[in-house]
Image 1 (cartoon, helix red, strand yellow):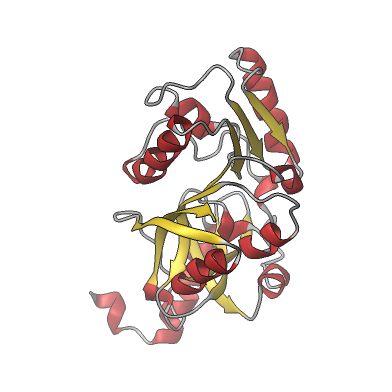
Image 2: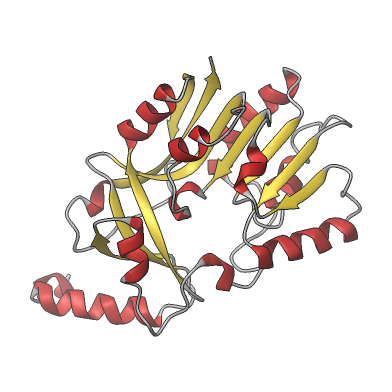
Length: 255
């Protein structure tokens, strides 16, 4: 392509303009030493943080092809008698609504979504409208994960300032099962970057894949499964190993 013949500095400047002007794409830019450094390096012209996005942005209640590995292990958990699900970063309950068409939810299921305040408010209102408040609840406190049967995190770990191992270490009773899906990982190293979601820019961690699995094992969990979410692209251009990023998932049980 003609653009590839341009000097790298010109291509990088053009991409930066595209990133700053983005409204409807999922873009990544830059490399930082830490999550905090990425947050501090966010452009002043954009809002920072996921709670700045409209509650209905980018989401539907449809089951995507990359949802099925996590859905499988969640269904197995319910079959095995697990009844409390902590949906970390679950927005307005999109997976709760999507999956109930595929899985027979037990009457005593309690599904709790943890998200930012504006999204939680919208989720609660929607749950009232759909008359599902006996099963679906909301919180802004990640510590409410304590004692749950299943931690389900789909596409959310990368936006959190703390790694999952740090959160687990703060709990009195860890989840029996952890199901991660569409988690941003890298085959070579951990990257901290910025993610443009159109309405805002978010600090973003792309964790070294093997390191993530090792952290879960060190936290007292045994691996049941691991997978790669093919067909869901991610790349951080102009950054070393930025082309080695991908989305992945896994299922671990507490030993």
